[in-house]
Image 1: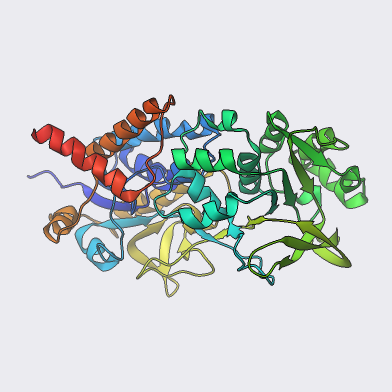
Image 2: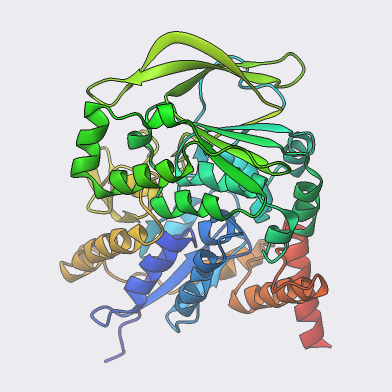
Length: 457
């Protein structure tokens, strides 16, 4: 009797959620599987490559752990393929037995205030994509804003907001060891940043940044962290939160260490300001300031305006107030996430056979990188249960990558990614660094072609 062919599973999105899903599938022995890890970029790792701040060298080293899954014999990386453009979702589903959607939530949320569309007003997603070397980054728009930014306002008190503030406040010497593209380093070195203000619409007890990120600000070589002691004045609601939540208590203790500091001459002042809600961006041709309303926090933790206004000067405003998912052509979306039941995609309220979801597009933009591991395991458990119950079973034998190649597509496979990896390491050596990120899609694909030509030669 011939051996049963493996269950073919396409995982759409090669970031942490996708790689954890592929790992959970490849690491089990109950069901023979062949996993295609698909990404629209020529490179794997998603937000580990293009979301984690480049100065977080230890966190970005997570890439080496994730790479073990790419090397697994049951996993095939297929980059440079956009589902919905290069291959329709319907076509992909005809070629595989199951699809797991893990493509994240890349859209940014807006402030919804007047002046938000002025030049000099950017989303954190724009700035992060730029300094991480994402191929889709709007380099000209970001650099035009950064190159004249003496006064920066960052709206939001999550980790991404602190990342942006920290990167803009760092000295060139601190940024040199990172993997940033050289043009990013050059622009940041020339930027005239003197003041960075981080605005939190509620109190310090409601801030969502981690204590580790907060304390890291205190180690910047050329910046002084400032906190108004009045923002940390005790009140019953804050005291209650600190008593029941150790994370809040640690954050308040870290903020207290910064309270009362004065900006040292010649350093960037990095001010953390709370109970301050932006109500309008000022300027005509570009941003010149942010009108801010003082708030109080009610018993339900909501920011309530007091009517007390002031203006914070700003040449650059970066909003970092959350993310939302976008629709993949042919996939349902409800409020920024794909409707599901334990990871099974729901269409019209009914589980859709062979469709699953994991990561931010499943649960929303919450948690840290490691949160995706448990999330992916839940989804894979549902998929394997569907195989065990007979709902899901292997189908045809054709390969969708062959279909893509026949129509002139240029998928990037694991060997091609290794060529990109080697090219980035070589470019880094030129600059005296471990790696320099190739930021243009054409440069990434040129590295693949060069390696192929060398092999053929």
